[in-house]
Image 1 (cartoon, rainbow, N blue to C red):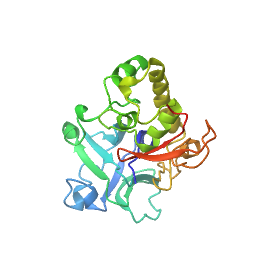
Image 2: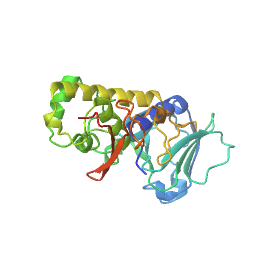
Image 3: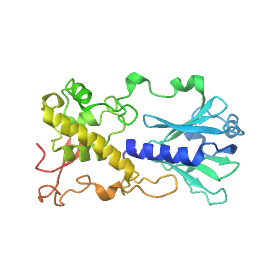
Length: 279
């Protein structure tokens, strides 16, 4: 199973902003302490939560931040198997729930995790830097810091790495993994093993349009949910971008561009789906 990528995390951020901003916390329950770093006893979880109000929902890379009005922040890292759900308090809890935040009005926010890869932290704002990756550890967030195609091209030409590895390097780009890197390269008509430094100006422009376009389309369709990597939004609906995938997971099917079978291979320990029109 792979981790959620940028479109899924941004979808959840927007859901959280709509569903939890201005909500006051009535209770907070630590169900599985393993998923709550720094919490040794369950009663500690609600210490800085009960009575506080959520001001806004933010995103730092692939971390979700719920800012509170008491100088604390809830930091959520969903990992490979984490999920969020907004439910009525009376609704039956799923078996994988690790923490529950109950509001004075409007039910619960529940954090689920089947495999224990997620973490929920309550951090004083002065200490946020200690639990979030530093700027030199994270790549470019193309949603938070959009670039012109010219600046994008300058950045790309400083790298000699193959495009597949470059796109999926978290120190170069935030939140582009196997799914969206394959779709971006197909859309741009570029092979996975091409060196970024060797791209022509026209190819740079195509790649730029594809990166921006694929990410925004995936957010528009509220992420991608697949059998091997399911994704549900805050209200339990699956992401619909799977219906718009061109090559990912479609080995043997006819390419929408060439009408010949889509190929699958392994490249530097990463899975690649591609069409013979990519050069």
